[in-house]
Length: 331
Image (cartoon, rainbow, N blue to C red; front, side, top):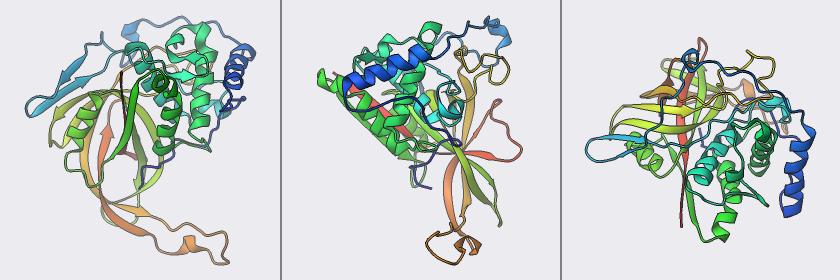
């Protein structure tokens, strides 16, 4: 499966998130903030009542010896489910997780990232008065990532390039890339080293049983932000903490969950190396008279990393990590 994978189900940004002219971008952001109805923030629950509430963050950067421990503090955990995004942001995991990455570089590292006159450092996702501006920024990322029912890691790197252009104009140097689980003998070590530079965008596929022994078929996907990793170089397991834009504690549990930002959480997961046969069905070619989808599919042995955790339990699919986007900046 290539890393140009779509995230989530069908969803697209609304509003006039236009590229190009600075004034047009500014007007789009202002319009989204002005037209949406602000909701009164719900009363926060006590932290003891929230599963996965993060403890006070302590930065870690240990890459010496056989084991590693890396943690980035100051990363946002924005919700993807929002009004003013088509289908209430149902498939905006890619843009929301990239916003988390940009938040780190803007708020922690002081990089002037953003669009037109708007800087990410000027937006506080936890301030209700900034909620609509935050939504507009996520929508702009979706537009720049060529959202068409989902986003790919490839196009999200393009959205990163657009959002970091003001930083390059100010003398910053930026870089980004992608690491796949395929043909990578030390995926764990690569993840730790790249996370040490900045938060990552990690994609996993949802795989269901397929015909044949040890065979699985991809049925969807999701993109999250990695903020912490603990494990061993060359190891077969990794412990991660995630900022997951699709797993807010209040999702479908409060009347105004689409109008308010949930409390930040750091979700604990384990990645375990797995080898299995990935089944790919034949897609029908609409330009031919025959139905190619009736032909036998193909099988290929692949190495993925299975993601498990208390908030990632499913009776129908297994979450298999396929790769991640990494990002770096310096002045």
